[in-house]
Length: 526
Ligand code: G4P
Image (cartoon, rainbow, N blue to C red; front, side, top):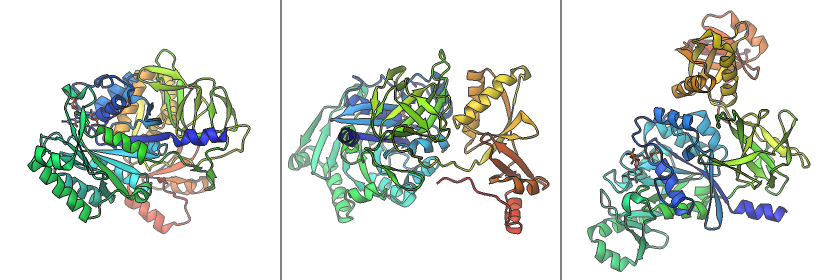
């Protein structure tokens, strides 16, 4: 049994793709599926022709819910391995839900649009990966068309994200005439042939250097000069520093035409780490072959309109998951029956009978489970994984139902979307549910919140921005003293914790300086 678990875990690669909207994440996801043989032609997954903005696109995708790109985790076999690709929401603002997904992966593929380089809005996301020491593989995408020089892109990665780029493949030909890539580990040049809109695997041919020099002419000369420069700079693949999140192997290509996609997919198997023991709250590793344990990183309701269900997505951390087993929820102490466990691929749900470390299971009808909950096999040692960190909200709004007759639906929606972590709902103990304050990291979360209340709960709301600039966690005693101050409001979260909101950052600073005895804790990312 334990051998089975460790060998199955070693076959897993659990990762996410992060990028700025439009850099090519969807296209690349689809091409991974094509190269792994999970779909037979490109164009099957994508359903977003004529998109206008990432915001509306995301909402549309969320409403459809069925299309596979919003699947929480795609699982597909490749070269004898099981790849789990976890979806990160494709919106512009950094958001907590993206961050939670990153807590459930072992590596990340960072896709850059080579015409644009690193764009400011996504810098924070890349920085988070860097600060968490997540291994990052970089893909320079869209090299089939005019863009920045690849060397310039490396410079941006180094200076802006502080990740040392180590190119593994390098483009030959560019600016509208991409011919193929050189693998710097082997010096093999792979020449690709385009297929119509890249809907099929691109035929490829490995060409010896001497022949390539003759065939490719100046494109070859430029490329080899650049790779020589990279060698002089010692920008070579370095596995230990990649695994430590300090350097990033860089791959070049074009998701649209499939150039370089196979090299990248191979790298996920060959370079990205398999699941390793997760540390519990006391920093003790939960060994892979210990009894089953998992943590919930996402909760989503109403995925299937007809069933009005609620799915908790859990990443398996140790042991073998057998559908039907009873697991304990560490927070509530209650048993949870896993009779309904599924993966979601496209519009289809497939029952999952067993899963191993690194896999994601969707637990259906998980009413008692919240984001961050630890689950463990009742027969083994209990375990508690560290809670998922929360980010300090930076924007605030008040919400009220437009139709007062819908207050029941409104309340239900508030609780549900708070549990899903769409926004944090803060209530005034004296006012109850009447006019809660919503707190979020980015404005987009409010738009999603309002949209979902209307569509899923039939309770359209009016949102108005609330004049707060800062939030701190506090306790009962300090709350008493803060309550009387101008520009301070005390509210409570749904989990009962008290928070203080400040209309003015400087007023907060003054209070912190003058009354250090008051409890005013930051809500921070751990
Ligand atoms: P996203 O999920 O990161 O938001 O990006 P997505 O894959 O949707 O790609 C955004 C646009 O960039 C799409 O064009 C896509 O075809 C194009 N694209 C992706 N990879 C490449 C590439 O390697 N080379 C080139 N030239 N284009 C690429 P669109 O016009 O918005 O959509 P569509 O009409 O082509 O589907």
